[in-house]
Image (tube, rainbow, N blue to C red):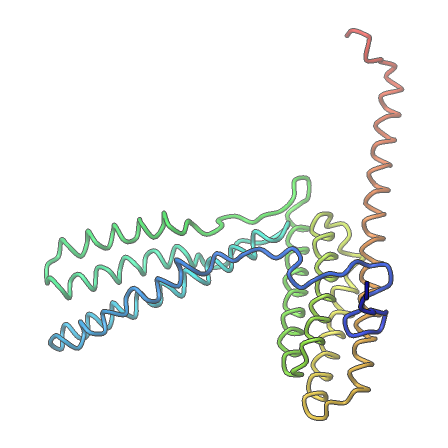
Length: 296
């Protein structure tokens, strides 16, 4: 059976001995769709209500429309922020509770629309409270506290969270830059490199003591990869230079090999630390001279 060639420097190739990693490996379906998209559609009938009433009704209905659309946007951003929070081992809570703000804005929007329709006071209050509560039940609350690891002090947790956030910013900049090149294979190659980088990020999150050893990779090397990607994208978008493309692909392969090797070394060091802890504990138990069949 024919098999497609995929060498070290081929467009779809990776480091020797590494399995093929698709861009969807480890991906999870986002919750920022479906119900959230309906939130953008539900208030649109207020446009017809606004222009079918007097100036006061116009202002109130347009205000309600704006509040409900803003609530939908805040809800979607809150869900995306929560998914990013849940995807990491170590993370700080979102700086602003977007989903909770979405609940309050939904209540205000419904109250404003109800007041425009009825002119009463009690009905808008009821609609506002019910809308706020139902939105909160439907989409939940924002993460309210930072997520770290037991046995790791807050200072280390904050250092890791800041370093990972900065690294993710560099990766996002790489993704934005490579799109300018208009080369789907190059985009896929960048995605595979980013998967290797994120393996290192998850390793550091699992053991923040690895941050010092990995700081150069998460900082200097990743910034270099970002800058090289931006320069390649600009050059290739103008000239479609095959030589520049080949050199860039080779650079990604070399970087990926080094990131993979460093991640494996970090994991090996973690295993060594575990073995040392186990040996020390066994030595202490042996010094106690207690056997499982002995009674206290």
